[in-house]
Image (cartoon, rainbow over all chains, first blue to last red):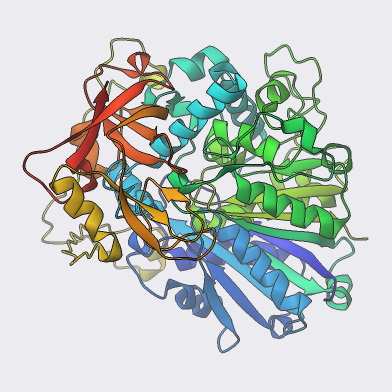
Length: 428
Length: 185
């Protein structure tokens, strides 16, 4: 396999609704932004593309992938659509990586989008719920927030996680987004406000849950020679991992923890794993990516993380899957302040602030979640962090981390059904 | 469908409650304003139309069909793997552990709440049923769980993990998994 680099990225402004643009136009906005950042890239240097969008129901257009491809002027080069629920964007990113690593392409464009405003919120929830078993799950629950609420109630039962700890994730991500002009929601909140907002599925409130969005994102990947021809600051993709789990969370085993490199079996004498409280796919994806990137102690060897916080609870569960702390310690991990940015005032008393900033961009909770674009958006924000170009792209440097040599991006589908983890590092 | 609000008297943030209900009925339009100068067209507001779309599927439960025949007849069926004896509360005809074919088996009608939630919102199809309670049920001697509705409690404060529940069945089957539900034992 050849080394693969990310050389540019672009994101459309995520919004509740973009009636002014079709999906092709939103992808074009992100693509043109990415091209504008590396003027040395000429169209004939692009060998092909991969596209991602989650739901044909939302698009009301089959083969939307090729329509975006032709709008970008990338015909007759190779293209295919990648789909895997909420992890669609992360899978698309890795598919582009495969195209370059294999030698099939020297330069590959990964684009993703979703147009979720084309139906009312409750119809949108119905579409999303069809990504659960339509024999046994959809007809009973039919609501993803309900599934995640059940998972976190078990997490609370097993480990003593609190709703206030969950609310701290919401405070953090909404606050970070105040400095991210691409974010859909920018709010300065208190734990109390998060808890007092409307209950959606007990114990998840409106402010514990990400929102639907219209948006697009683009990443451009290249082999080493092409990358250094295009930019002085390419970011190398040093690890990729993809995990899966059974669609119905009722089917998940209650066995032994899959151990991360920094864990031992005696850490987990009483944990039945993954049950419905943990994401085996996330753990599995993380371990693969860590092995490939040579990471033994993720908390100390990774500088920041952009992870799939569709729910505040799933951010806490993901700290554990990614072995930033032991299973069961995710609540304490956020309460102590580890995933907060060191220089931002959250109005909270945090003892160990900024060990490893998580979702410095604001994550899905604040940026929005246009499903097919989300995993690529994370890659773009991580790319800018590592390049040190947040000020250039955000118009302010508040979110630029001092040390951002190595970042992790994490994309997550279903009730933890597909999860991708990719490691990005300073490549120059 | 109109947005549903839950009946709560507590003050909410952002004035979310004080607004007129949104509807999507739209309007019939007979003419669209159009400028003489084409160069102004890029500044035009987007035209948004209604597009109703309905579909009737012929949905087969396939190899899962005996489960639905079971609950229509007051029996709760799971499957057990012949080779490895792994037992599934939510049935599957082939074992995910060993690949062997499973056999249908009757599940106990009593179990415990493994986890739960109360949904105050939902997808459009189930909005009218909110709030409703979801539980994953665990059974003695069974390796996996079963998703079901819990009836007969007012709110989440009345549900506990580990609480004993028993299965009940609709008399008039709808051939949906909700033909079977649980109540506190």
